[in-house]
Length: 498
Image (tube, rainbow, N blue to C red; front, side, top):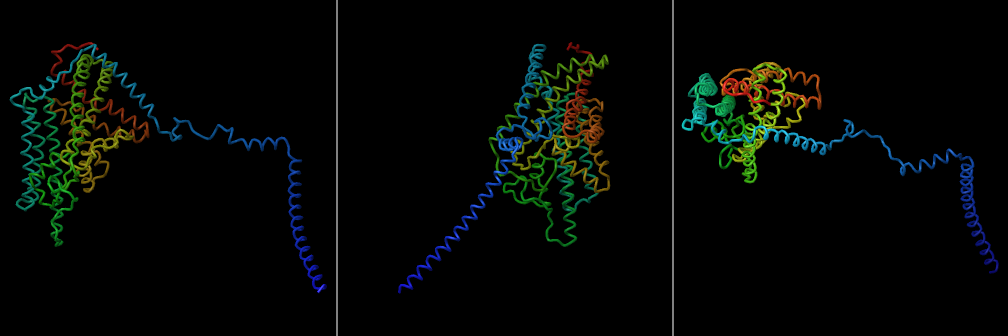
């Protein structure tokens, strides 16, 4: 019994000793590690120099005391900075102040020249004849002719050759009949002539598109008939133009009075069987556009009477005496008000008026212009400032020429030539004089486009576009106005000193 308890006591002591030895060994290893770490730190501390001490202190304080980093100046192109709102506001303030001086100088020099009654008399020199309005009413004859020619073609009463001849005759009459009327009637004023010829030019482009689209539909119908297709309709979009329920219109169901007159009044030059439609008429939007139209119209008339007319009258003497330095000074002086009026006209016509008509007719496509003010090349400007005309030229003139094998450069020249013709047509015929300034100004865009595209880029190209707008074609238009004044009033009026 005693031996057993003694052996148990010895065994317990042995286990305790083993555990204690293990703990001691672990503690010894930990102590050795701490001793080694301490020796390394002591050695590093012993070998640390003043330079090393300064380096450690600098690394620790970089985030707290650094005030520089790698960056560009704000006005550098590589900075990525684009918030120039303050500079834009400064430009607006300077523009207002500089033009306020011109307005004050004009009022002191000439007094108030704005007279709305005088503008009305330009349209109605003879209040009992109203030649421009009568000419516009007569345009319905050409619209009906286009509709009935298409109806005859759709049922096969006349051949395609006969239909093409009749359409060409109708389109030619759209250009020559109003031009002959304006030139022959002494009661037709220049302003009335411009309005009438503008309406007929728009009708010419619209009816040309109307003829083309219906011809394409007939070709598709004949192709499907040859392949025994069950559908004889022209593919189109999902909404209709002018119908109460916006049902899908197919050819020849589109050949109605309602359809063609919806297209005639719609703010587009390209015909479709089914136009995109807006769901409702927004009355507030419509009212805002109407107020803009009325206000901007009065503003343009006031600027013409108060600013442009006196400047034009004062420019007669330098032109008659061929004083080139004074001519350049007068042209530059005329270019500024002309450019302002052109900008106001752009907003009045392409935004206020066309949106008003589109909203009233629930016409869905409101892309009447794009960001032409950011143009860095001349072609970009002409492709984006007047989208309805650009779409017409692309769809009915440029692409058909490419299909026929004409190269791109020749097709582009043809587009510029067509545009130059209509510019000259709308200016020379109402003024009843032919100087070709508008035609030459438009054709001069071709070498200018090459020069800007070849040598100028970015902001420089955009500045060149703006310069061409300010002193390019507006100068040609002003030369027409000046020549008109010299031709009709030069001998009767005395030049006022500037």
